[in-house]
Image 1: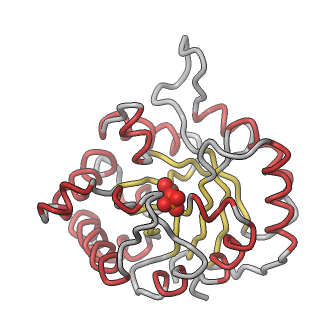
Image 2 (image 1 turned 45 degrees about the horizontal axis):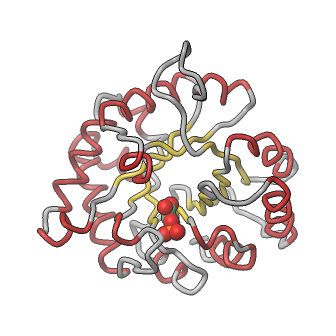
Length: 254
Ligand code: PGA
């Protein structure tokens, strides 16, 4: 089975102390993950080392950055490179979250560079895609997300792309409390997998975990994750509440 993943995206929330307490509370639930399951915490840069040491003794609990810069190194004050993340043993990085695309003008081409830098530094990108509301209303969401994949990922060979995690996050469902229905999520995930299969073959496409993001909560995770092409979730708001995220981890397919 491809990996089933519960990924917490804390965004720009929580103090260091609050983050530490949240991790303690989630880990205190002692959920044993199978070899096919992963729990990932995408935390702010200053909390990466603390989070890494919190999960160090756990099996299949991982730490992720929320972003990295699209250049290798140099005079880019305030930015963080993939190489820096690698040097502190961070093995995952969220790339192309819709908030970065929207507020920081990240383009598909820049995201392709970020993906390359991550892979060069042995970091698995959690690559986000997803359409805004007007595209969904126009009914052109399938083409829209296919272009996002093509322009940021399809320069990669199959043996690289198979390790990437994809997160489908319809922008109209992020932080709005408006979740895609299970049927909408499954339909889009199957579409994404078919786009990957057309480029790389169905065997490679079948290995890639595709997470759903957008108002995943304890009370809808199980149903969303039960769909055959939904391999877990990228979770914002609900990942800030220990009891919610614990239940979301428990909702992963086993
Ligand atoms: P949300 O955020 O769960 O708060 O909707 C998801 C995300 O942006 O990753």
